[in-house]
Image (tube, rainbow, N blue to C red; front, side):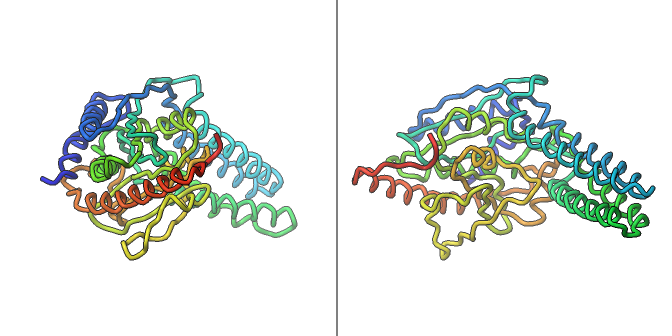
Length: 373
């Protein structure tokens, strides 16, 4: 077998829910591989709440459905001002709840608290970090359907607000509320059904990312000062990455999440466009342009970008890829790992270019600043 396939087989042999023995076995394997190529390796424990990751999304979907029903009732019975109050006030509160729960609640919520472990490996003094997550999860609703449903809920919310405003201004629009309400509730149902299980071995999501990071570390020259962060509980609200981000100054990172055998390479960012020195990627080597992360998707890169890191997420896949994520079908029978070596080779060139750039800056005694300290 290839080195990439060996890594996949050692990591994706069974589901790896955060905190499980299987996840720890995969972490031990990665630690041994990184030590063998000269990295200093340590486990970093953290404490978080499982409530946001397990129940935040289903509760948000349920609340959204109830708000749609309430607004539809008022609008259809000739009380558009009440419908508008429900949509604007309820939407603001739901948005604030979801924002707080995802940004801070995963670490600070006082209930359902457990311990997690990140794996941190360094060589020299890293300014570039390679990131992937070790844990896996399953859900009854495919990630593509959930993301589409979240986008649909937002659009229907806007449309219902416009409808209520029009009705307040005298438009005869009561008949539109029934189909509008039905569409809104229909969009909220997949979100409400997005409960977390442990039936997926996570070969693609994200054993492939971990294997890619290991191969980049193995292919990079020993003089390259880089760090490796393998997080836990990414599937439970990005808990590992958010805990890490609280303790470290913002630098630059490449997050790898999902490298399939088929499909196109994608470079995804959230918040700010990554710092120019992050990706010296010539188009003739197959790198696509950067694209913004779609609504409804959460990746470790989001947690880092939220606190000022310059980070891009590398993935590769197609629509069939998305249909496997978070399902029992995400296992090694559907992933050979053929593309991992290619992506790792391309990323190792980024590591080399980054090392050269930082070396030149040090040679000229130029300070390196990549974010607030």
